[in-house]
Length: 501
Image (cartoon, rainbow, N blue to C red):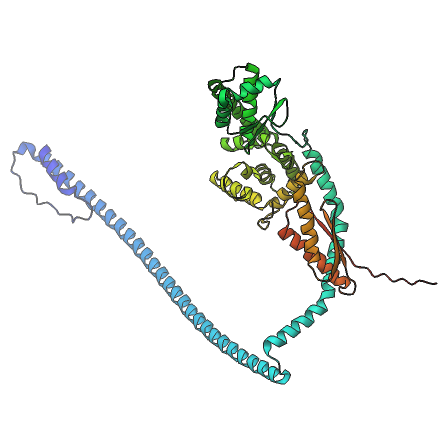
């Protein structure tokens, strides 16, 4: 009986969607004792069949509902796609229409331009025939007339602009520069020194020279400096273009004299030790300079190079002093003008670093190339490249570095220069002024910081005198190297006198 129920149940437990098949129940011949069980099994089978049919009906109904929903979704999607296709087609038609319209407008514009050119050519030809002048000649006459009419207006505008600048800017600029110089003041003064080593007596000179001159030759070879012992009694002069080498030689020679045992092997030993000591001093001086101005991320090699400024001067001004002073002033000015203080800080710090590179080229070119190798920002490189106006200023930070450098280098007592070069600069200033038409006399005064120009009142008007001052100023800026600034003063006056007898 159990096997029969299992067979019936497995027959009606089919997957959804499979047509229900009513099993054929064969007549079972069994003993009378089991008739009641058979009838119960048939009733169970009938109940199972009924349940299976109901479940199949539910499955079919669910499938039908899902199919209808899917059909509705597909219809909506189809409608949406058709609408989008229609919108795209409409936009394409609009674009084509606009393209056609633009092409028509371009064609009409070209035709109009051609017509205008033809009309203009006819008018110019007609004017040339009427005036009997060529176009170029008429243009020159017209420009000359306009220039004469505008000359007075240009001069008046220049005077008005200068007066306005003096009235509104001079006080603030003076206050700003005074404040910057106050904050940039250092404890140093300009240095006017040479490398001199004092010796106690002539016997020490003999030991320095050595037998057949071997000591002095060794010393000069190892240090790279020249020794002069004949000029002044009681001292030895050391000369070398490289100030660091000269300092190493000075330290080594002083220690050798103190030791007293001067011979080639000890010379090499003392020079090597002095070199190590000076390298440490140089690096410490460079680090001290960087920390004094708040520059803490400077590459190690650049710090060491900056430290070499300690043993270098420019026109008698110690370079590390000048750099510290200039950087402090530049940072103060940048803060007052709301400029980039970091750019000005590094620009002032590295503006003269090219002077430490013993290669061919100007110190500006060498400094720019060095900073590029260390991937400095372009803004810092521009300040170095433009601090002597070799290039046009690209930003206000470059102008600030230029101003700070000029203040530090041109202040009284900061530097001295060669007398011949000084005379040459004065003559150049006067020659530039005398080369201009209408100038009768010119004088360079105040150590070359001002040029007084006297013009002939019969050959130049007041307006031309204003333009003349600007022309002389521009030529001086382009051709003459000078510290600080040069003021050009043009004087035009008429004097009339009569004598009563």
